[in-house]
Image 1 (cartoon, helix red, strand yellow):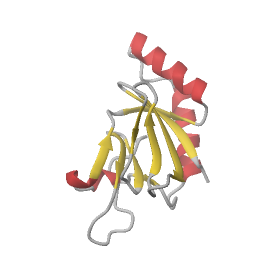
Image 2: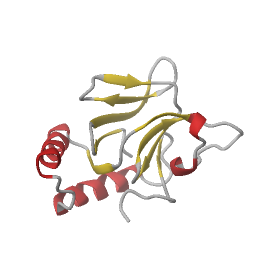
Image 3: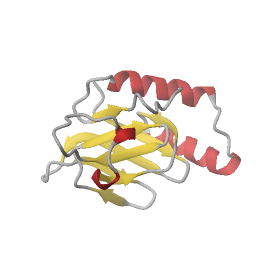
Length: 135
């Protein structure tokens, strides 16, 4: 089961780790802005973005696409690709920013591998069924 991954979005590069900090939040960092986001319980993964969120009202693992706005602590811009390796994620981000190309087959394969490793029952990472990263 995956314990961390890198997400390339339209405007930044993020690191997500399932290991919780001293406050009980998973690690979620914007690597370009050098900013860490806290106060969440789950890291949701959807085509429209990666989100750090908490839950209210007893839902254990709600779909990240359906979480109430007030429960979301951070939501990124739309996802380009997911990676396990930081250097591949950086390459993807810089190529996307310079060319605007989103359709790289290699990025799709890397994303599929990350999603498969996360699986459908990860305790922190929640894959959206309503808005999957890969259609």
